[in-house]
Length: 220
Image (cartoon, rainbow, N blue to C red; front, side, top):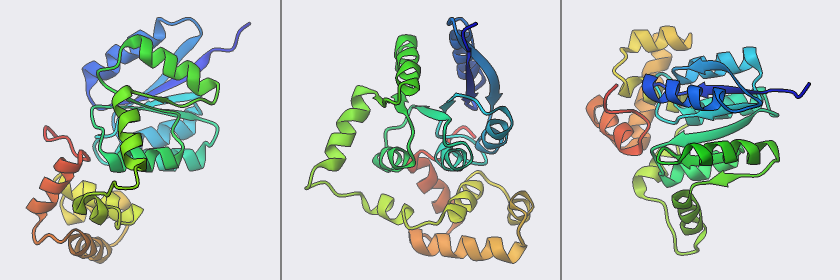
């Protein structure tokens, strides 16, 4: 009996997640074993289900797909991660390829493209949408430089990025402390360092930056 490939989907938009699950479930040899609606849930579900492939969105609540991918790659180095996002920001591409994702597709990709990306991942190949391939070439060009905003974002530690996203999503300091299991003063310290590194003076400016970087969906 041929082994079925276990697929997990991490996507916060219900219609996209369900449509993708239906597409993949209809393919011979593929089985959708789990569907996560945010980055935290994706990490917990991946650790429990140990899927072969994860289709991962980037802009998700509580923890974005970049940070979730980092954690999953450490926990499950054999699990392949394919990014499926509407965003092609250069800091995503650079960071995710360094993390070791097996594909980066934009959401205008066809079902055939997604199936091919899964096949490629299983053969240890990397699939990129044409627009992503173009951005990779631009990033590699000697004359290319990151924007100041992206340079500043890259200064944030992993924990600061988690706090940054939760602040941008409107969570109060007490809620963030409870969610991350840290003290109130620790969150306040992280917030101060984040605002210093990003050169902003108010939480509202943090929200604007998070939206511009595509870390937070404006609809959230």
